[in-house]
Every structure is written in structure tokens, then in C-alpha cells.
Image (cartoon, rainbow, N blue to C red):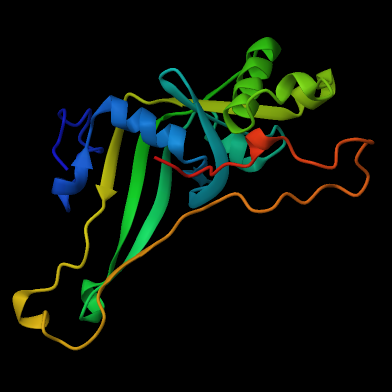
Length: 220
């Protein structure tokens, strides 16, 4: 993949497999929008901790949320963190063990996490998360209470210090291995929405999930 723009900082510059890297802000935004699961790395009492969480984007910032009482959220607020977003798109099988690899798309974001303090801003951010995952659902939900909003922390990072790596190739066996009598190629992987499982206590007339929910979350 060509490097569409220079790295925004020394810590985002790819040092290995730099041919797979890009620093194109448009590609960063596209991958963040395509992959809802993130992992946030930070220090707690001097020890590294990586937390999985749902993420979403508003403009040029990436957001995530959790309990206001969570030690992970408290430790990340105002601190330097590293957030990654990754999808595995395929397993690449080669003729030798160490040539096996994966097809993947990943984003790495560095920066200082900021906590939203204003209740209206928090509610707007959480609404954006819901609309990102399930468009049109927010107006149908029971409104949040003030206590629920207080108990929820929302953090964000700017996307100004980010890098992308995309690996989409097949086996890279050396010429001398290509006649070896074992299957080689790519096993595609995809995360897809399964059959909806309704709650047993649904209100009357709600047995079927809305068609808009029946879509793949990992795409592009």
C-alpha cells in the first residue's frame, strides 16, 4: 500500500512492513467507521492494561465509553493512551509454517484521552454511538436518566496521530517452495449478523427484529 501522506509523528511511523502502511486521514476514518471493536492500552499503577471496547467516530475524534466507576476509564482520562482497531479478513496458508500470515486491516491511534464532562455533550456522543450501530433506534428507546448519564464515562481521542496497516495479499512462498505438495491460499473470514434471538418478554407485536439490524458490522 502506498504511503499517501507522511507519518504525523515518530511513533506512528511504520518501521516493519512499511509497504503496508498508510497515513491517509481518509483511510483512517474509513477503517474506524468499518470496525466497531477497539482495544485501548494504558497504564494502571505502572502496569500495562489493554481494554476491549466499542468505538465510534464523530468528525475527527474517536470515542468510547464505560462506567464512571471503572478504574480503566479513570486511568485513561487525561492520560496518554494507544487505541487500536483491527479486523482479520483472512488466514493465509503457505507451504511452510513461518510463511503463514493473515489478511487484516488495522488502525493505531496515539494521544491524550479527554473525558466529556458536560451531560448534554455526553448524551449527544452516546446517541451518535447508537445511531452508528443501529440507525434510527435511539428515538424509540427509553430516555436515559440523569443518574445513568452520570454513571457513564465517555472518552475520546483526536485522529490526528494515527497510522493504518492493510495486508491483503496471498502466500509469499519463495520460488523453491512452490512445488511442495500441500494446499496454499487464503481462507476468507467475515463477521456477520446471525439470526436475531428475541427477548422472551417482548411487548406484543415485536417478534421480528427491524430489517435494518440484519447487516454485517465488519464491511468495506
